[in-house]
Image 1: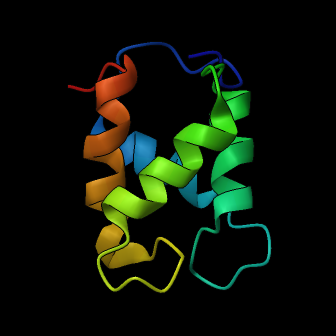
Image 2 (image 1 turned 30 degrees about the vertical axis):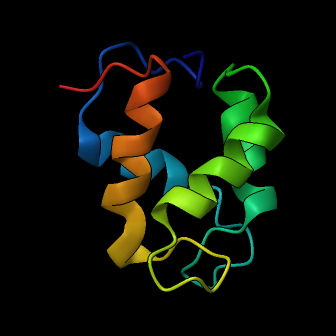
Length: 86
Protein backbone atom coordinates (compact mmCIF):
# COMPACT_ATOMS: atom_id res chain seq x y z
CA UNK A 1 0.00 0.00 0.00
CA UNK A 2 2.11 2.93 -1.19
CA UNK A 3 0.79 5.80 0.89
CA UNK A 4 3.40 8.50 1.41
CA UNK A 5 5.95 6.22 3.01
CA UNK A 6 3.60 4.24 5.26
CA UNK A 7 5.09 0.80 5.64
CA UNK A 8 3.09 -2.36 6.11
CA UNK A 9 1.62 -3.64 8.28
CA UNK A 10 -0.24 -0.77 9.91
CA UNK A 11 -2.59 -0.55 12.87
CA UNK A 12 -6.33 -0.03 12.63
CA UNK A 13 -5.90 3.43 14.13
CA UNK A 14 -3.29 4.35 11.51
CA UNK A 15 -5.61 3.24 8.72
CA UNK A 16 -8.46 5.26 10.25
CA UNK A 17 -6.22 8.34 10.28
CA UNK A 18 -5.30 7.77 6.63
CA UNK A 19 -8.98 7.63 5.69
CA UNK A 20 -9.76 10.75 7.74
CA UNK A 21 -7.15 12.72 5.77
CA UNK A 22 -9.33 12.27 2.69
CA UNK A 23 -12.26 14.12 4.29
CA UNK A 24 -11.44 17.06 2.03
CA UNK A 25 -14.48 19.18 2.88
CA UNK A 26 -14.00 18.69 6.63
CA UNK A 27 -17.57 17.61 7.31
CA UNK A 28 -16.51 14.63 9.43
CA UNK A 29 -17.77 12.17 6.83
CA UNK A 30 -16.06 10.39 3.95
CA UNK A 31 -17.91 10.40 0.64
CA UNK A 32 -17.60 7.80 -2.08
CA UNK A 33 -15.43 10.18 -4.12
CA UNK A 34 -13.13 10.84 -1.16
CA UNK A 35 -12.87 7.12 -0.47
CA UNK A 36 -12.16 6.42 -4.14
CA UNK A 37 -9.24 8.84 -4.02
CA UNK A 38 -7.92 7.22 -0.83
CA UNK A 39 -8.06 3.74 -2.37
CA UNK A 40 -6.44 4.98 -5.57
CA UNK A 41 -3.54 6.55 -3.69
CA UNK A 42 -3.18 3.37 -1.62
CA UNK A 43 -2.55 1.54 -4.87
CA UNK A 44 -5.66 -0.63 -4.77
CA UNK A 45 -7.08 -1.87 -8.05
CA UNK A 46 -10.55 -0.69 -9.09
CA UNK A 47 -10.78 2.13 -6.50
CA UNK A 48 -14.21 3.32 -7.67
CA UNK A 49 -15.74 -0.13 -7.46
CA UNK A 50 -14.12 -0.76 -4.08
CA UNK A 51 -15.30 2.61 -2.76
CA UNK A 52 -18.89 1.83 -3.71
CA UNK A 53 -18.75 -1.58 -2.11
CA UNK A 54 -17.07 -0.20 1.00
CA UNK A 55 -19.79 2.44 1.39
CA UNK A 56 -22.51 -0.19 1.03
CA UNK A 57 -20.77 -2.42 3.59
CA UNK A 58 -19.78 0.15 6.23
CA UNK A 59 -22.54 2.78 5.93
CA UNK A 60 -24.71 1.57 8.79
CA UNK A 61 -27.09 4.55 8.80
CA UNK A 62 -27.36 4.46 4.98
CA UNK A 63 -26.72 8.16 4.44
CA UNK A 64 -24.16 7.51 1.70
CA UNK A 65 -21.15 8.52 3.81
CA UNK A 66 -18.76 6.94 6.30
CA UNK A 67 -18.78 8.78 9.63
CA UNK A 68 -16.65 8.29 12.75
CA UNK A 69 -18.93 5.59 14.17
CA UNK A 70 -18.76 3.61 10.92
CA UNK A 71 -15.00 3.91 10.48
CA UNK A 72 -14.30 0.58 12.21
CA UNK A 73 -16.51 -1.20 9.67
CA UNK A 74 -14.60 0.47 6.85
CA UNK A 75 -11.23 -0.58 8.27
CA UNK A 76 -12.41 -4.17 8.70
CA UNK A 77 -13.72 -4.22 5.13
CA UNK A 78 -10.51 -2.72 3.73
CA UNK A 79 -8.48 -5.44 5.43
CA UNK A 80 -10.09 -7.97 3.05
CA UNK A 81 -8.19 -6.42 0.13
CA UNK A 82 -4.70 -7.15 1.34
CA UNK A 83 -4.24 -4.13 3.59
CA UNK A 84 -2.24 -5.73 6.38
CA UNK A 85 -3.50 -4.63 9.78
CA UNK A 86 -2.12 -5.66 13.13
